Image (cartoon, rainbow, N blue to C red):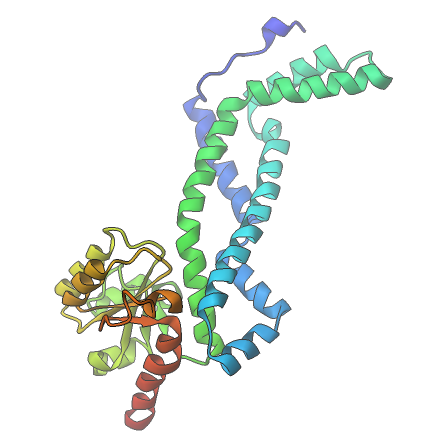
Length: 298
């Protein structure tokens, strides 16, 4: 079989694109753990973390370090996922299979020893170059997955801390979006503490939360949610460290309470802002106050 028989692909056909996307999705589910799974594994392997949170009532540094640790675990999973996809590419798609068959015929047949090893090296390089459109599609898929991952990791960490501290809560992931929409809460609301039942009874004695890793202009979506639903306020949890005095004040005008790292909330420029609290204040002062109310009035 001659080298000229190798197809030159500059664009994946629609049929192969459909098959490849389905294959990527299946392999991603198989090889990449969810953020919540990774967070749970970290806490299961290190029971001292729960003790540290409760005894020291300190979470800002832990949230920051956990985000890094979970991200690194995700990247390890992604390496295994990429390898699995490329290893079996020729099994699911005809064009990469044809490319590999031709290259094997050209580089491997009737060779042995050092000559075979050198040919295998050349084959790997040429095959990778020729299937680049598939690599590019895989890269785009990974980019989209990574964009969503940061927010999911942050949510997973916060929800795990709720559980460790024994705080009852309802989230859209836990009870479903319909239950939230039935009481008028949109998709911008991530959770309600202690829960939807309490929200129905007395909404101003619940904590309505949303989480955003970066504020930028996206906090305005939260302001629109407050206006639409007429809820008293929303706690916006964020790991964004670029919060200006003017932005904090503008968010305060829309009844948004910012929950941030302690070194941001307690910084000289923001410590006098009325609508910004640290994660420590949020977890160990504000939530317990709400929980205590429902213990007395439920």
